[in-house]
Length: 290
Ligand SMILES: C[S@@+](CC[C@H](N)C(=O)[O-])C[C@H]1O[C@@H](n2cnc3c(N)ncnc32)[C@H](O)[C@@H]1O
Image (cartoon, rainbow, N blue to C red; front, side, top):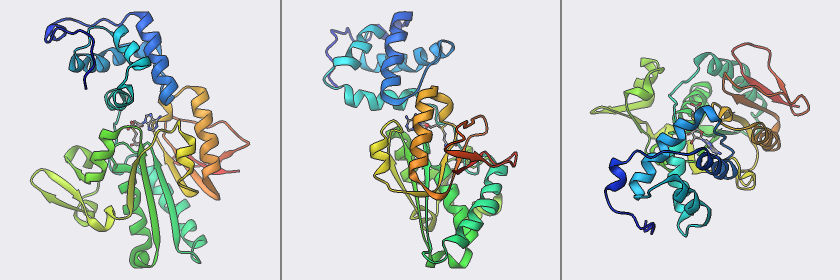
């Protein structure tokens, strides 16, 4: 990408790149300001490890140069994307946290389907969807719940993530065994085709889901998508600080219909009684809009 850092090709390969405390401070602020992702001191080694690879790829000699480039460099917008591709943790699977999804299907989706009988329309957002397993899972659950009526309904599912790389995988709808580790065999048969070592999401499921690169920090871009009946934002707010979490929760409140529900990850919690009330069921991790 043409960064002119007077590199000597190959030298940085062999050198151990060390991130000083000052470099770490600069870089974590740059990352935080852009994405809300906050690297605590104890996570410095992750940043060092993941950005180290970027530095080697770019033939940049040290983190100080990289931080300067990310502050004033001409190609830094491109590099931000590559940086997010490198530093985000994208762990996910189909049917992740089955008890929560069962709660969703029976206690939230079933009554919502009754409530939307007149419009036959549902809008679901999987915010921070990684490689797409979560929104496709939600499409499968919607198909299962609507059964034969699915053709009469308009179920729009949006999957978004900050990382371009994971959105590309999501759009391909193609997965390996690893993504299928929590999927029942009957669902594999019904909703996927298998070829070689791959599992392809069937077209009728794929066509229910649209993907877009979206940074949760950019609430204006998010709000262009209008209102949703259900928002899943699981296992990403753990990477944010308190302020960013609060901004996200306020945004989700604005973007949910009055009877909408927000689902979060099992290690996350929302303490904002003015905006959301937690469902009491232990497996739910679900919040109703106040
Ligand atoms: C651990 S994955 C969670 C995937 C899925 N929601 C699940 O629970 O299985 C976290 C995802 O959050 C994304 N992410 C991190 N910061 C983000 C931000 N500011 N805006 C949007 N997505 C973000 C990462 O790229 C990553 O794919």
